[in-house]
Image (cartoon, rainbow, N blue to C red; front, top):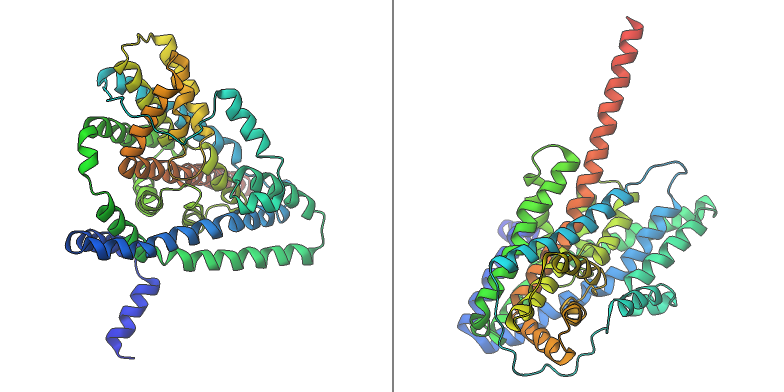
Length: 422
């Protein structure tokens, strides 16, 4: 092997992943322009990559959470509660941002054809019932169907049980966790090839012609998500770390958001966030639970989508909305967003629940869902990028804030000790 080929191989296996993803993106766009038929065929690479991530993510979550809890020392502090609080605040504020933006820039929809073949939940009760029923499932069924709520519950239960096991058992769990993590890293290294196939096939199949008719609506959705990513979330991070939040924000958007944009699945992006958390030297006891949890309840992007499309339908039908109703919509949208599945298009199926607040018939609401699917090429990608990057952002912020607080406390103790010695 020549030096040039050796350097090329080393760059492919251990080079900058973000740079490789950008190259894959540009190559996909170029192929779609030059040869649409070849671009459609090469889409198999993207499908294989997404399926590989989805296949390994449930096992990774189960093993990491079990190992983390089983090896957790009694009395050792974790930071799940403040992270979960940030998740829920971000999801609610996203709905508020979407309400304010929708009142300033009201949208009109062309409600004609009804999107058939989709069965959305009939109300908030159905969402809560679905969440509760997803807890009490067979663990194998949870793994096979990527039911992350069920996986988390079983992982926590088994982790607590294994805390009473022998040291050998806990060592085996650690080794199993390391083995699955190694496998995930290998899958993640394939991201540039997968994204090359995804971008090429999406552009060759759909293009952007269908998006122009709803360019204003799409701009409002993306604008709200950008406000969340670049204004609201940084404010929440600053509240925790008390320093410039943007280096951490941009790191999470670059390393997590880019991959999530193309996989369009928060669940599939869990391994990516796990790898980032490990590289940032965050507390494994915390991130092994908070990242999977975030894939289920950190849904700022979904909250924006549900609120904006619901209010677009409201404005189209000339339904009056007062401030209390808008606040209630924010709460409903937040709850619906937390019930959205971690797969592409999951939030769109919950729009009829929010529409039901205004007495909009289900058939009309399903037309709004159809509009969502029409623009989902960009809407769902941006939504997932915001959701998934927020998971690692808040986990890192809380872990770093607590590490800084501990360092300050240790420094104060040392200073007091020095005074005593003097």
